[in-house]
Length: 93
Figure 1 (cartoon, rainbow, N blue to C red):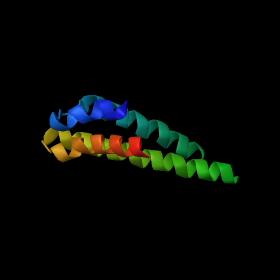
Figure 2 (tube, rainbow, N blue to C red):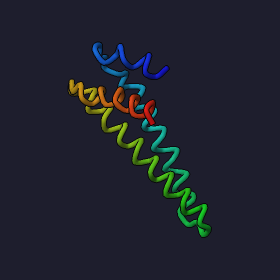
Figure 3 (cartoon, one colour):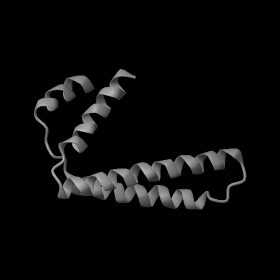
Figure 4 (spheres, one colour):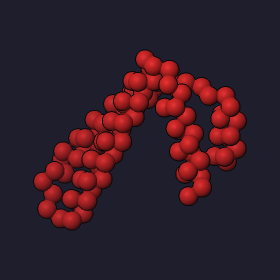
C-alpha cells in the first residue's frame, strides 16, 4: 500500500503543509521533553532506557521542526523528497 501511494508522488512533488509540521514538532518536543525531564533521575534500568528513548524522540521532533522551518522559507525539494525515500525504506524493511 505504501508503494502504491508513494510511486506517483515521485514525479509530482508537492511542498508539505509546514504549519502542521511545525505545530506537531513543537508538541512532540514539549511532550517528550517533559516526560524525559520527569524520568531524569530514574534508578532502574527501565527508567534509564526509557529516558534515553524519550531524548531520542525529542531529537527526532527537533529535526522535523528544523526541516519544516527551512521548507517554509526555502524551496528545497530534496528535503521533502526525503519523506518519500523514507517511505520506500520502511516498506522494504
